[in-house]
Amino acid sequence: MKKQRTTNKRGLTGTGLILTISLISIFLATAASIDLPPVTQVPATLSGHLPELLCSPCEAFHNLNTQILNGRIDKNEAVVRFKTVMRDLKIFTEKADPLRTVSGRCVFPLQGYAPAAIGGKNGSGYIALGYDYFDGKNHGGHPAHDLFIRDSNQDSRDDVTGEPVSVLAMEYGLVVSVKNAWEKNSRLRGGHYLWIYNPRDNSLTYYAHNDTIVVRNGEWVKPGQPIATVGRTGYNASQKRSPTHLHLMHLKIENGLPRPENRFSKLSSCTRH
Ligand SMILES: [Zn+2]
Image (cartoon, rainbow, N blue to C red; front, top):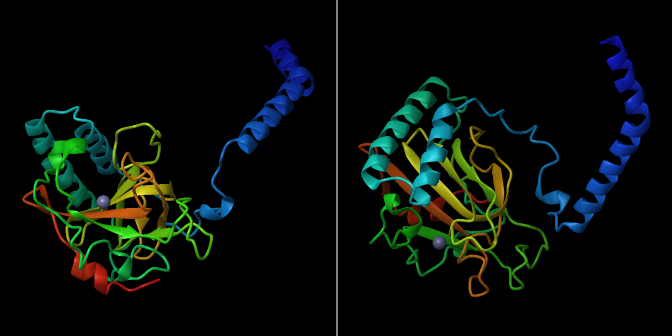
């Protein structure tokens, strides 16, 4: 045993050290060749954020939502499980809500932008007809608002500032699902998306097509807190014909089930950051 340890120690100072240096060099060379997002897009630390909690209902929501999205669960079973997950989330947030006292104000979810960014005429982009959450990726309708940024060359940066545009949490809530590994050729429409549960009005908000997501599942967020940057991820959103935008959908939970809600008026009245 003693001899083994000695060998390992010697190995580390010799061959192991060379191997370690080689691996670091390879990593650095690879990192340099990959198109990494600029450092300014991601906060150096998440120190301004509340620590994420161990949130099993968040995990359960994420898993179920993924199954529904991919059509990997029977619709009737999905409905039953959804009700259970939402009940568990409600109980969880009643017990542990570090932001209970945070104001109920809303913040316009694109930093530096105003409600003029909302697509359509007076929110006409919102079409609830034909939408059923449980249809997953094959759902109809568009019970959402698309919020467009100035990005004529489609590089996901604001034409004026040259910087990425932060997606801000519209209201306070608990992050219950984060998907940030969308593949370029995937038919999935949401791309890099996240869901935030608001216990105060028992609702879910869906932010889709993001570039970089800077929060994690189980993390509480305050209104106006950066949660992502606007991007072009998702099957349709990544196509040339699609101007760069944030897709924003709000689902009220009623009798345990999700019902889309048009929040055009609310969005128009939110504080701008
Ligand atoms: Zn949309």
